[in-house]
Structure formats: structure tokens, C-alpha cells
Length: 621
Image 1 (cartoon, rainbow, N blue to C red):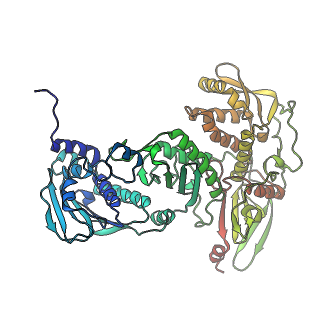
Image 2 (cartoon, one colour):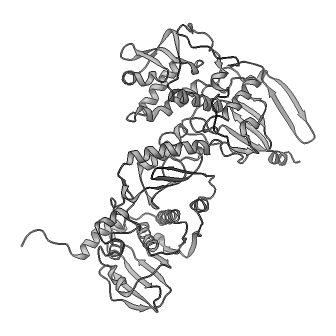
Image 3 (cartoon, rainbow, N blue to C red):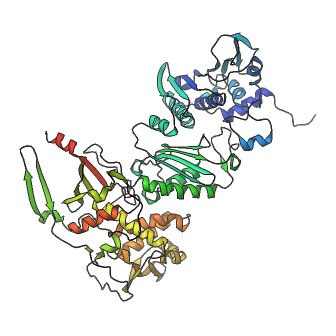
């Protein structure tokens, strides 16, 4: 007798259970997907003690005959596929035929079902082994499966279960994923006898998402490229999280976990999302079945694409273009006094000198109920409203001269080429162009009057967004001009940073930065982008090296937005810089012409609103 022999069905089922049944939520997922494959329009899930003692899934699907009810306990017994070719065109969630026998091998399972058109139902009971005979039973059309005492015969695995609240939360996530996949089905989740979630049937995916993700302000995007269709409802970048817990991904209606997919969605936000942060929302990817393989994970939670890189590059480009318009404005209005959340590590940089409003002239308007102070800063031209100076190799900075004026025509003047229509919020008039500049506060905020309230802009964030847009467009057209330095500036760096700058010298030159190594730990800066004339060359080069080091391993073009965002930060006006009315109005006009105008390149909102109604309420009118 040979040493190799076939495993018994009981042992094989136990092994399969170790892959399929990880925790109670795994069972809920398998049973809910079976209900959806059976054509259910209403699915009710009941759990007790997080699923340890009871999991019950009831549906109104097509039900099963007595023969099918017994056969479904056999390994690899399924009605979903019949031949190998069927795997390339799956239209169902399940297809392996392992769920029911695996679950039955580690629990006490009762299946009660009645087929459509049948006069009576049947029930089948299994307790850690094969099923018993089918017995007549009453019941409505559909199927109910009760799973009790999970892992009663495998106590070692029971010890690995988490707290009741944790297991219940995982079950809730499974129900949410199923609800997002099938908005045409009603889902009810009860925990210890109390209904905790109910997703009623919805007409569209968007309706289901807005019901499921209450409290989130989501932008809807729909893009198509060849056979690829992407539908997304995503929150603004300021709502992003450090992980993917708030992002649901679905491929051909199947809820999946895919790091590359999630990264593609995050990168579609460009630089406004810090590396490692992911948006909140839902993304559906619909592709031909023959380019995706769902048979790569025991729990069918992962998929594999025939051309993953090509698909996700397309997602990043197409979804990014849609999001740039969808988030042209931030979510306005919010609770006064609740500041916008700032991304970790964000800093506006030091102020240059005392706030300008300290020496500003002041006018006061008052009535019996309110007192409003409007600060008009003294003129301090930061932007030359004349034509921009031509770039010249003989341009000199000298040793320590004052910053060169930043030409308004380079940054804030309206572009000559036609721009995409801005968001229509005010009867056809673009938002920023409709605002009337009132004054500057603390040399940091621009106060404007709109048709429905007061608008406050962060001048650094607004200027940074416009500068970034100019840099990005100039880089894309290879039109970044270089301002030569009369005297090269030597910058001390680490040897690894110097080596990195040397390795990517050509790509860095395309950014308008000319650097040459002068030893193992220093570089000489010979030129900087003319759009960043007011920035310090040393800061540009140090931050450029830091960004490239942080993006090590990524292609240069993949890190370009992060690099340009950092450069834009140093080349824009900052908190503490006073600007004139003409410059403020030019900045407002420019914001209407750029993508993601509601957020700075690092994701911080540019503008907030205080409605006139809220203002009147606060002063008691």
C-alpha cells in the first residue's frame, strides 16, 4: 500500500473550512452571496454574540428541492458552473461549491428551504459531519440557514475570535459590501434581537451609497475608456483616512480588497492626498469578465487582472480628470467654529515679519446688534500687474537681495486659452469671479462677499493651488522657463540625496531646476523655475531631494505632482504677506481657471463660507 492516500470527506471539509471560514463574517459573506445568486430581493441576517452562538440568513430566493438541499452539502457541488470555460464568464458570486460543507464541518447547521411553486419545504441538519436526510418542513419560499455554536468541535480556532463588538463590526462590513454591490436588494441586519442596519431597495448605486454612507458629502463621477467603466462616489480630500477602511472597491459587482486598485484611486486625487492616505467613498470598476480572474483567493476577496497596470493607469488618469472638476470647490458652509482638518505634517511655514494688519488703517461699521471690523492692508505689491519680464541668463540675485517680484501675469492672470466651465452655483456665474473682495485679515485671510454669505480664503492655499497649476501645465508642455542665478548657491545635502539628484538630473532639469554636484555632500544650484522667482533656491532643492527620497521606488513621473506641490508651496505668497486689492482680485479670477480650485496641492481647503443667515442668527437679528 502506497503512502499517498485520499483524505476523508470530513478531513477535507475541515481543511477547506480553515480557508473559507475565518470568522463569523466569513460565513455571513458566503451565505449572503448564495442568497444573491438565488435571486433574492430581501435578505435578513440575524447574529447573536457576534456570530459565535447564532448566524441566521433568510432570503426570498428561488429555494431548493429536497435533492438539491442534500446535494449542496457535498464538496464541489454547485449549480453555478459546469465546465472550465464558465470560469471566464462568471455571472455569480459563488462557483466553488465549498461554502456549505465547510461551514457544516465546524458548526451545527440547519438548512430550511422551499422552492418556488413547491407545496412544502424541506429541512436538512448537519452537526460537524455529513448531512442527515431531508425532512418535510413548512416555510415561505426561499431559504433559511441557521449556523449555531461556531467552532464547537474546534475549540482551538474558537479562541482566535475577537471580542463580540469586533466580530459584529466585521459582519456589518460584509453587509455593507453586499448592499453596495446590489442596490436592488433589501438587506436587514439584526444583532442580539435588535435591528442595527437596514438598507432598503434603491434605484441606483448612488442612492444606495448616500443611504449607506450618511453624513458624507460625496461627488459622483462616471468615466469610460474603451471596455473599462468606472463609477465612483468619493468624498473631498480633507475627509481622507490613513488606511483604506473608508474606501469600498467593487469589480464587476464583487466587493474586493486590492491594494493596487486602492492606490490608483488615491493617486487620481493627485497631490491633494498625502502618500498613505485614501479617500472615503465607493468605486465600481466594470470590465469584461475575461480580463479578470476571481478564482485566486479562497474567500474570493481578491481578483487578478490580465493587464492590471494598464487598467489602473487608465483609472488614475480618467478618474483624476473627473475629480479635478468634481472637487473644483470644497464643501462649503459647515458649522462655524469647526475648522477644516489639516493633513498630518502640513505647515504653512513661518511668517515674514509682523502681521500687516497691525499697521493697517481700520474702518468700523457698527449698529445696535453687531460690530464688524474691516481691515484694509497698506499696499505692498507682491505681483507685478504689468507684462512679465523675459527670462534671461544674466538675471542676477546678488548676495542677499530682496525677493524678486512675482509677475501676476505668470500666476494670477486669466489664461488666454479657453478654460473648462466652472461650477455653476450662482446662476451661471463662476464662484470665485462672483465674489467681491472686502479686505485682508491678519495678512493671512482674504474676506469676500458673495450672494449668500461671507467667504474667507486662505491666501497661501489659494496662491499655492494656482502656482501648482501653472507649474503642472508648464511641465506638461515642457515650457518651464529657467531663471539663471548670477552666483550659484551651494546647498549642503546628504550623500544619498546628492546621488539621487545626480541620477535624475535630466528629469530635475525638466522642472526648471539646474543643479550640479560639488563633492559628495553638496550641490550647486545654477537655476530655478522663473515661476518661483521669490522662493529660496536652497529650500527648493532641499525639499526636492526630500520628496524624491520619500518617493524612492516610484517612477519619477509618478512622484511629479508631489514634487511640484512642494515647489509651489515655496513659490507662493505666505501667511504674513500683505497683498493689494488688485492682486486679490487677480487671484480670485485665476482660481476659476484651475483644477481642484477648492483645495491646495496638499489637500487643505482654500475657502470656507459663513452664510448671511448664520451671521444674522449669531448677532440676534
